Each structure stands twice: as C-alpha cells, then as structure tokens.
Length: 201
Length: 201
DNA sequence: GCGCGGGAAGACAGGTCTGTCTGGCTTTGT
DNA sequence: ACAAAGCCAGACAGACCTGTCTTCCCGCGC
Image 1 (cartoon, rainbow over the protein chains, first blue to last red):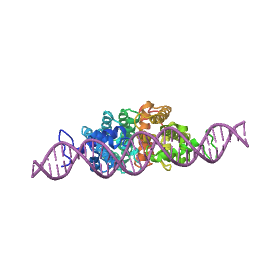
Image 2 (image 1 turned 180 degrees about the horizontal axis):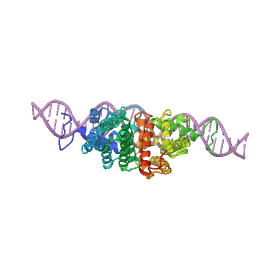
Image 3 (image 1 turned 120 degrees about the horizontal axis):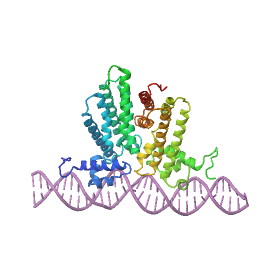
Image 4 (image 1 turned 135 degrees about the horizontal axis):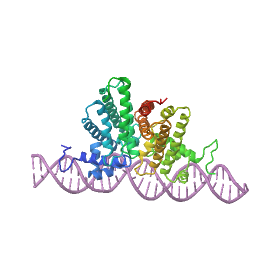
C-alpha cells in the first residue's frame, strides 16, 4: 500500500506534491531545485525519482493538482447561482476569490509554461487547463441561449486570462471585478442584439 | 565614440541586443546562457560585461528595446485612423499585426517576468510597459468622450493581455480579432449608456 | 526474534551557468 | 609610424543543477 494517508502523517507522494506546490508556485519551477523540494518535504531524493521519474513529471503533477483545485473552487461557487447569467458571471467571482488567497501569484499554468522550453510536455498540462476554461465558458454561454456561444466564450476567456495577468503583474486583485463588469456588458450586448424580446436577467 | 553604427557592421552593442532579442525571445531568458549570446553576436564576453554589467541588465535592455518597437508599431498603425472609435480599436489591429510576425512567441514582458524571481529589477521593465499600455487606452478613451475612461481602459487592457496570452498559448493569432470585436462592444455600450444622443462612429 | 522492504541521508558524477581575467590582434587617432 | 584603446578568443573559478547510487535505519508481518 504505497499511498497510505494517515491523519498523523501524509504519504510521501502527498508531502512531495505539497512541497512542490508551495515552492514551485511562489518562486517558479526553474529557480527551485530538487534538493529544496525533498528537504522541505522531508523525503529522500530517491523517493521522488521512484514516484515521478523526473522533475518535469513532478511539474506536470503539480500543475494538474492546481488544475483540480481551481476547478473545484469555481464549480463550488457556481452552485450558488441559478440563472444562466449569474452562473456565467459567477466564474469571475470564483476567480476573484482565488486572487485574494494568501500567496496568490498568478496563474500557475501561465508562469510554468513561460519557464519551460517550447515543446515541453509541461505545455500539455496548460493546454488541458485552457480547454477546461474554454469549455466551461462555452457551455455556460450555450445554456444562456446566446446566438454564438463559441464567440462569446472566446471573448470571456480573454477577460479571464487578462484578469489573471493583471492580478499578478499589477498586484491588483480587483481585476476580477473589472473583468466581471466587462463580461456583463458583453453578455448583455450578445443577448440584446440577437433576442430583443428575451431579457437576460 | 563607442556606439558607432556603420552600414557594413553594426556596433557591438547593437549586435548584442540583436542576438539577445532573438535568443531570449524565442527560448526564454532563463534557458539561454551568456555564452550562446556572445557566440551569436560574434562578441567577446568581456565586451558584454563592460557594456551591460550583468545578464540581468542585458535582459532589461532587451525588454526596453522590445517596448520601443512595440510602441512604434502601434503608434504607426494608429496614424491611419481618424475617429476616436477607430483609433481605440486600432490598437488591436496593431496587436494583430504583431501576432502574425514570423517567430511571434507572446508578450516578451510577460514571459520574462514569469522567469525571474519576484522582486527582480526586470519587473520594472514590465511595469513600464504596462503603464504605457494603460495610459494609451486611457487617453484614447478620454478622447472618445466616454464617461469613465479609466474603467474602460482597465477593461480594454484585460482584453489586450488576454489576446497576447491566447495568441501564444493557443497558437491562435486571430485572438486579436476576437479582442477587437469585444472592445467594440464594450466601447459602444459605454457611449450608448452615457450619451444616447452622441453616436460613437 | 527476524527478515525484508520502504525510506532517509547524502556522496557522487557530469554538465551548465555567471562572471573574471589574460593574451593577442586589429583598428584608430595623431 | 606609433601609441593606445577596443575587442575577440578562451581559460578559469566557484556555484548550482539533475539524476544515480550507496549506506544505513526503522517498522512491519510472521
């Protein structure tokens, strides 16, 4: 039973992922070396290579874990809303909550993808994340009955990415509020131009 | 006269900046070492350190040069437009031209800022670039007479950043077109809500 | 009691990086 | 013509990286 998770002490894999998340996210995957991760996790270096095989695969596992946590966070926020318009804009509410978390440092997939060389398998994790965001927006736009859900989803994805960039580089968590307001304007324009009799609210 | 620029052979500084631009931009500032830059530039390593002092200052000079070229490109495109609405949307036309240039690899300031450790002076170059974009959008929005130029500029900046991200990570230059369409909708909504008698066109 | 496997600790190899320094060549000013 | 400065080429030091391998120890099932 290699991955046992007792309450007293998490498994080796969990300790490694926790240490990798903390160090990779705050300082970058390139500047943080393997030695610091195994030291922080209290784990032997051989265990890391037995479990993950290489640093690059550890980075992928770290990004996939971030992806899962982000998805759970967004989906949890969306359960609070009922109307399609509220649910669509609720994505930016969930994003705003992520921005205010302690230690927030931007989108992990963007920074990691910028650090590895082009063609690295790490980009696959970023592609998976982007596909999930795009699909989420497309589904929400389709549920709301807009004429061109793909086009609106592309526009909202731009706002979503831009807000992540601004929150990190301008150190301004209110970027999510700005994005939400812009998304509301885009959505209202999309439904008004196509179905003048059907109110979005 | 240390920086002479004859037609036959550019100065040492210009050769260094050209090599740094090509290598840093395509492969990242972290993975490209000093040795490859001096080899590509045909320059002694001592000349690099005499001219710039450190790799970090070379990175800053590379980013500032990119900043200047981007500004010139955008401003040149904007001279073709007359009305405030056209000039505001023209920023995304200029951005779209940058996306289709050979070797395009996203916003250099974003990737470089993601590669250096937090607090590095390299982030200053990114801040200067972001301030220019923000000011440009704010001025254009003010000239167009919208009620809240700062708010519209924040929203357009999100679209601008998001388009740069999408063009790089989705390898889709048409992100500029999507951003332009969204910007038009946001602009039209802003002028229509505040001054119903004044047409944006 | 005892074997045995997982894991901690760390040495080690091989490579790469930044930054400094030396030596010799070329170009330029006078 | 000659001195002086700029510059190319490359060795070198010191640090750091990934990945492998060895050694030892602890805890568990039987």
